[in-house]
Length: 217
Image 1 (spheres, rainbow, N blue to C red):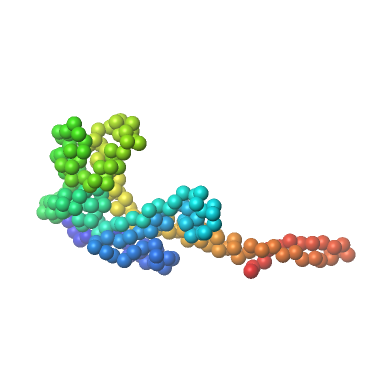
Image 2 (cartoon, rainbow, N blue to C red; image 1 turned 90 degrees about the horizontal axis):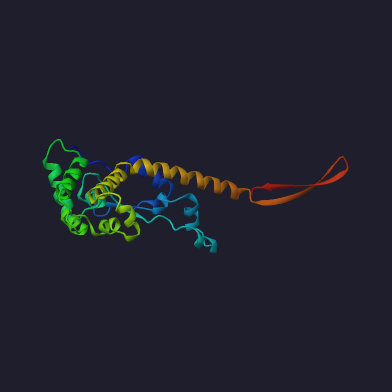
C-alpha cells in the first residue's frame, strides 16, 4: 500500500496560502476546506467580492469543497461516494490485501454487488453503501433520460472513478486555477492603476492641441 499520499502537495498548498490564506482551511477531522473561488471562472470570482447590483446577475461561485487530507483514508472513500461504515470496510480490505490498487478495490466492490441488480436501484445502491447524497445525484429526475442510456453499474462506476480522479489530480488543478486567479488579479490591479483621464493643453507649431492621457492615481 505504501504511505498515505497527501491530496494537496505541500508546494501547492503554500502557494495558495501566500496568495490568499482564506482559500484553504486548516485540517479538521481528516479533511480540509477548499474555497469554491479556486474552482470558479475569474469573472465569477471577481463578482463575488463586489457589492454592485450587477454581481447578482452573474453565476454564483462554486461551493466550497471538503477534501480528505490523504488519498488512502476513510475520508477519501467517503468523498468518492460511500457511507462512513462502508468506507471503513473498504479501507480495511484495501490495507489487508497486497497488490490491490485503490481503483481495484472500488471496481471489485461495485462488481460484486452489481452482478445481480434489483428492480429498485436504490436498494442496490444501499447494499453497495453508496451515500445518500450520491444516490440523489444518480437518481436526479432531471437526468432520467441520460441515466436510461446505460446500466446502473455503469453510472455508479463512472461516479466513483470520477471522484477518485478528482482527488488524484486535485493538486494539479488547483495549481492551474491559482495561476488564473493570480493573472486575473494582476490584470485588474494594472487596469485600476491607470483609470483616470487627464487633459493637457499644449501648443504645437503655435497651434493649440489637447491631449488625453491616463496617469497613475
